[in-house]
Amino acid sequence: MPKKRKSIPVLPQWIFQGALDNAKDVILITEAEPLDKPGPKIVYANQAFYELTGFTPEETIGNDPRMLQGEDTDRATLERVRTALKAGEPIRVEVVNYTKSGQSYWLDMIIVPLRDPDDKVTHFAAIERDITAVKNLERDLMRRHETATGEVRRLAKANDIIEASRRQLCELDAENNRLISIIGHDLRNAFTAIIGFTALLEARVKDLSTAQIADEVTRIHRVVKDSHRMLENLLAYSLMQRETPEPRLQPVSVSPLVDRVLGDLEDRATPKGIVLEPPASEHLVVADERMLEVVIRNLVENAIKFSHAGGRVWISGRDVDGHSRISVSDSGVGMSEAQIRSVLDQQRVKPSVGTAEEKGTGFGLILCGQLIRKMGGQLAVRSELGKGTTFELVLERVP
Ligand SMILES: Cc1cc2nc3c(=O)[nH]c(=O)nc-3n(C[C@H](O)[C@H](O)[C@H](O)COP(=O)(O)O)c2cc1C
Image 1 (cartoon, protein in one colour):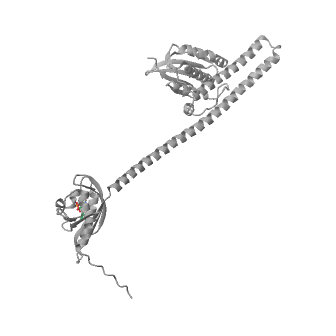
Image 2 (tube, rainbow, N blue to C red; image 1 turned 60 degrees about the vertical axis):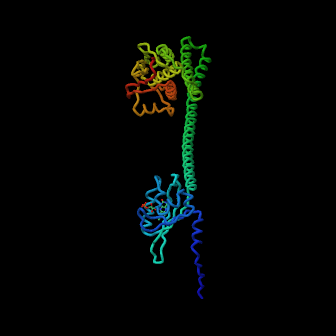
Image 3 (cartoon, rainbow, N blue to C red; image 1 turned 135 degrees about the vertical axis):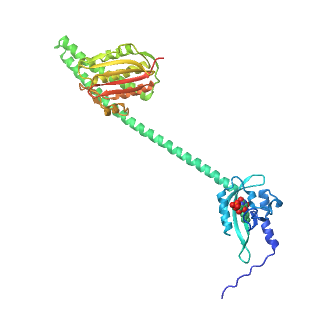
């Protein structure tokens, strides 16, 4: 047996009217025609509408809802509304409206067509809710999300930097360890030689002539001096790593400094028959004297190392383009483009062997680079294979 449907009681109109009047959402009813101005004409608005908009019934009834629109009301949304209304279809949109005093608010608006018993759309009813608070919350959340995303991105970046620094530190640490082991080996070799020479001297001193003893002492002296230079470099380098001392920049006279360096390296150059030539004229630069001396000593030592027997090493100074340039040149083996690049790449020590089998850690040049940068200068290299090399120190000129 089919269930009997409960018949819906027909309620008097005042009950519907009361429900609409007292609803908390805005309710607007318009005529269906015309849709263009002056339509759709408002025929009913409930209390919530007047409270929200500030308009009076006199200003509302007979008017059309466009009076609620303004600058921030989205035109594309209104087009969608218009299309739906034309097709007699329901639609739901969110749109910005304005009160009578010009205050904007967000509206969640549902418009439905109302049909007569012949199914003809005679009116539209809109149920509208003020969603400004929700929209503001949404906007705040968006902002917070953006801030949080920005923060996450910043943290990720910071993390990348930390990671890169960590990797750099690891590399530096590995490089330092490599350096210590190379220098350690060099020093051990030097000490082995010193011990050997002195033991020999001690055992045979009575049998040796004064000239022979003098010869032995010269050999010992040379090895001790080389070791001393190596230690000086090592200490200067370790100081740079730990304390990065601020350079004391002042006008420095190049000639006496070069004379000291050349005098010191005479014992290196003489056995190879290399002539060391100081600058032809006096020259002044702005530098830290001690740092400059370490740099020039290393450059001259290098030049001697890579010069053939009977070669020349000469130092010159000149002022160019507002800078002072001190160059250390040699007539030695020279370098290829790749070798120059490798020398200027200050990341790794590259042990090398000179023309007389002189060993070296290559770290003298790393130290030079660091000291020059500390003094605000630059190191440039010009070289040609088989012809020789010029290392040029570009420093501030004495004003
Ligand atoms: C019943 C009804 C209520 C409406 N209420 C609003 C409203 O509160 N705010 C609004 O911006 N548009 C409202 N509209 C939409 C406009 O009246 C109009 O249809 C819309 O701006 C698109 O038409 P247009 O392109 O000619 O402007 C309502 C429309 C109807 C039919």
